[in-house]
Each structure stands twice: as C-alpha cells, then as structure tokens.
Image (cartoon, rainbow, N blue to C red; front, top):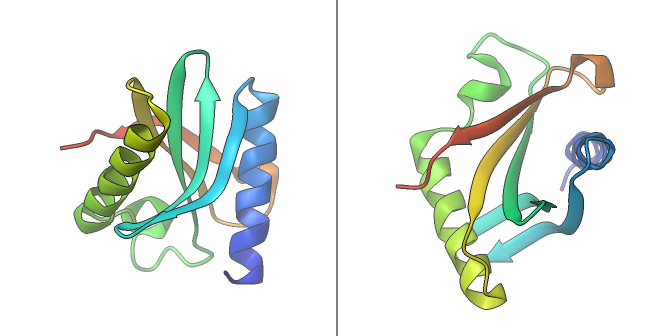
Length: 114
C-alpha cells in the first residue's frame, strides 16, 4: 500500500471510531479482492472502502468506486461473513480529497451488494 493510502485509511478508521464504530480488521484480503476497513456498528458489520483523490478531474474519490470494484467488494465481504458467521452488513465509503479530516465525507450505505 502506498503511504497516502495508508494514512487515509488510518484517518478514516479514527474518524469512524470517534463516531462509535468498532474496528475489527484492516485490509482484509480474499481471492476476490481487499476491503480497507471492517467495522462493527452495533450488530451490523460495516465494510468500508476508503478513497482519496487529490485531483477531481476524473470524478473524484466517489467516482472511483466503480460497479466492478463494488462486485469485488461484495464477493470479499461475502467471504468474510461466511468465515465469521455474520449476516447483517452494509457498505460504506469514506471519501477524501486530502488528509484534512475536515474534508472527510462518510457515506453510509454507499452501495448495495448485488
């Protein structure tokens, strides 16, 4: 992982923990892909994709979570849920244009698994 990406993930994890979520895992990998953060919000497992884009020329951070990326995240989440016996989950996104926490955008239920 690159240094700005690691810093963005740490910033996102800290922010979400301040909002009451519990960090379960960072950079969970399966044969399908990787999930940046896995957190728990009450009884719900939250799979978090962290995206930082300094340049919005091609749509910014949110636009980089393509349908293909969403499918990979969903398959990786399914792998995690199966291994750990969880059922209820959601997919959130944390979008950053810089490492300034005031610029952080947290999108709950950013997309749904298909």
